[in-house]
Image (cartoon, rainbow, N blue to C red):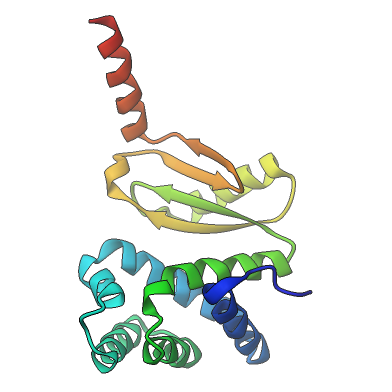
Length: 183
């Protein structure tokens, strides 16, 4: 099956997919990329490292390599992202991760669901959420989980163009708007 991803991120994601598939490391690389994406969300310093045009190619490569080693990332993941850094393409890293995970899900016949929670979900909670989404969409589901403490509580679930925002932050915002209309 040919990749449906296009552009810079899609080309890099397709290349990583082929390399990971050849080494039978698709799940391990996907786990590394999910962990890296979460680290980018949680660390403004890491995000600055990835996006800063002021840092040299060597500084970015050394920095991202050190982060990946500390995370215990697979050798393939470290080498690939090192190449991305060496090519001065770290600014597109998040899009590459998204494209890789989307390609992995598509080739497995899965639909991708992005789930954001206020706290990290336990394995049991993640299984419950995955089952609920699977029942709602009627096919296999690959869940990309991220944590955003600003939600206060609840979940935001995105599947394709559909989004269910059941976070306490959104409920409070809706309540605040409703209260403005009363006064």
